[in-house]
Length: 493
Ligand code: GLN
Image 1: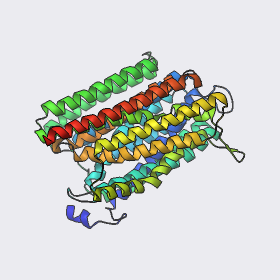
Image 2 (image 1 turned 90 degrees about the vertical axis):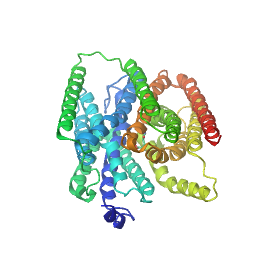
Image 3 (image 1 turned 180 degrees about the vertical axis):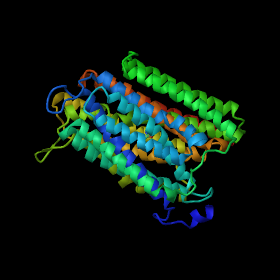
Image 4 (image 1 turned 120 degrees about the horizontal axis):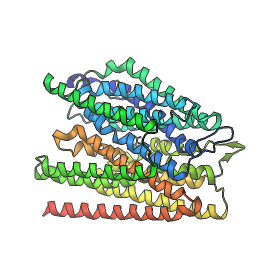
């Protein structure tokens, strides 16, 4: 297998299986970001007019958005477990893609009653797909293959090409024709992904084809546990969909944020104290813990692009360009487009610095990411101040904000993915993508909670929340730098 994959250079010098994964992830992210761009606009849209929305309050809609993003990334953890132990990664990706498509197609039905069912399906499907597809990327390469890191970089491109297509098509259809057309387009995009995956799955060979080896009896037991868990989950989802459990979105979001923090905390405690690691491995866990905190804080700002900043674009920004009113979601184009433009430059800068032995350490890079995030919200503070005087304001404010956030993303996200696989204790590598995405989950819920506070009373409530965020990004950046410095001093001593 390793011989074959070393010689396999058919996709930009990489194994041909990467093409299958590239296109699958591209369509999945097309559907995810295309729909995400519309979600809050649809929930808070007026109930009357040519394209009626649900008319919900900012606090509720943003909280639901946060819980949705949080659940999408949280489900990567059980999705990874299911693939490792029962399904195998390839099958998990296939099932996930089909369930996601069904979810978006459910959202395409113009009924508010099926709205949460659609969201639940996208959540469950993404849990099966998102982490496992990254795992298969890693498995395409033999252990010491130097192409793995650049394989992940190519993969990161597919994410951003996908979201560009999603914002473009779903954003346009959803806002200009009807919300449900946008959701339907997301579903059709994911169906292209399913077709492509089924057709070219063979190119993946045995990478991620089979679950961990174990006795039939042991597997049978795990299957039974899974069936019980699945049944309970379906009952819980059904009861809440039918309105038997009264859920206050904001309180739910707050509790979910605590829950995720406790899960992550317990997992780190387990790894540090009870996983039988040696001193060097423990030091790596401390490092990953620092990165985890920085990443969670970072995503709590980043994911506001689909939440509060989306509303800022709709309500306070002049979107008319030479007579054409640009769809609100198109402003978010800048992020993926800037990723594709700047990713090679950032990679070149790191390589250049590395040749001079000046490559910043991981915590320094993550702190830089947070500082970019803080500056991006300083720009927003100025934008809010201007909008209080004369709304609507020009688009350049949001464009600059997203540019800075993208620079932050590039110092943190692609690097974080590979750091979590590189510094993970060997036996726990499989679960590390789950842990990495848990940071995204926490960030997502916080984005909804903070975004709700910020937009609650329009322009008046934004400045205090954005100021608070700037302070905590900077505080965490400084904290991570100090902790990393102490860690290094301790190990040097
Ligand atoms: N933009 C990246 C993706 O969609 C990272 C998102 C995240 O981890 N929050 O995969």
